[in-house]
Amino acid sequence: MLDLLDDWLRTIDTLDQQAETYNRYTQRPGGSSWEGMTAEATQTRAGQDYRAVASLRACVERATTQIRNTVTSTLMPPLSNAQQIIANAEASPGVTVNEDLSITYTPPAGTSQETADANNKVVAAAAAELKESAQEWWSAENQVAQQIRDAQSAISNAANFGPTAPHFSRRARIQTVDRHWKQDPAQPTPNPAADLGLPDYQPGSLSNDEARAVYTQGELNMRQLNERLTQLGLNPEQRAKIMFDQRNSLRTWVRDLMSNRTRAAELAASEPNMTYEQIIAKNQAKGLVGNNLYNAIIDSSTRSRASVNDSMGIDPQRPPPLPPVRPSAPIEGAPAAEPRLEPPAAGRGGPTGPEGGTGSPRAGGVGPNAGAGGTLGGGGGAGGARGGGGGGIMRPFPEPGMPQW
Image (tube, rainbow, N blue to C red; front, side):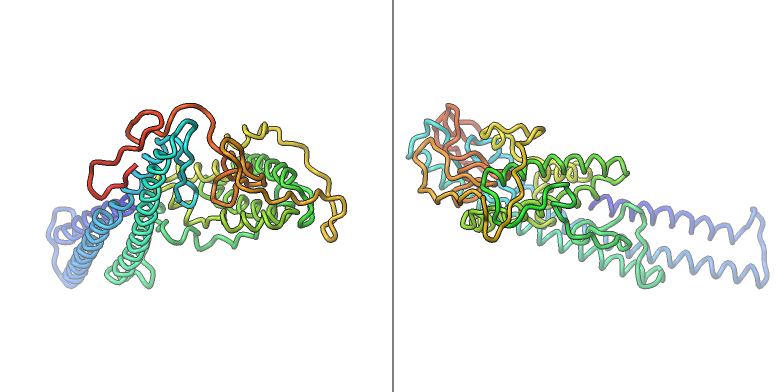
């Protein structure tokens, strides 16, 4: 975003220098003085152009100053705070930052109930602050985007370029709200069966394990699709949008295939698909920009978490065999829906589904988009983001107003 402002200033500097040089040249072309009506008209027009460029410079400088102030005072503080919260969370054993920026805590083995309860309170407070910071940051992003559009309109009027101000650089595109070029055609709705070469399964015809197998194969096919798109010359930004849309479509489709409709409804409620704006915001909150951001979206869209695959003994490069195609109404030969289980005892996973979970986001069970069920394995306690021994209560930040871990 600040690169855009730097581009504006560099461009107006060049334009200003050229206008000044031309204005001087009209006074003494070739080093010689000249007179007459032609000279007077040329000098008058050159002077008008030079003053117009000076006015344009003032317009650009006002706009860049306003936008920089908004970025510095309104956008960066909540963004930096969100990044700090995420970094501390990811450094804390048992703490997970989810795709929707919620934070969950699973006490490691050996953690006392008292410590776990204390850590849960700390995590809840941090989750609330992260949500607030993310909302403040997104509001500031849109405020800056509007200021950029207003500045382009003002620059257009000052330069008399017409209704739309030129982007001084081909890189100078607003990326906060509209991420499509005007000439881009509308993208077709993804169709997992057709796009990813999967069988045309019928709704409600697969067990949870079978749905998981289909999802894992879909992820592998998405990675292969991404390689083909790379060979065709699509850049990371273009491929990120395609892979993200395919991933959302694959998740929704696989849920529709589940014969356990209660579990499918729970997944839809607890693990809703993110929007592209939300996944952009999540990765920007981690400090990612440019191709690094888009490559991260591609990676997260095409791979389940390693812990999920490990817990099920699945090699993501060699998914389980695909199940046969069956009719859906009535479901002839389809596995019976798994019964809804009570919450598992300590050390055991919850009911399985293609995305795992026991009803709360990212908790329990196994599946393509959720963590392993039950308590996390391994020894040690829940040390804080800034240290702390096994099983100890997470230590708070010393700075006022910061989240406590």
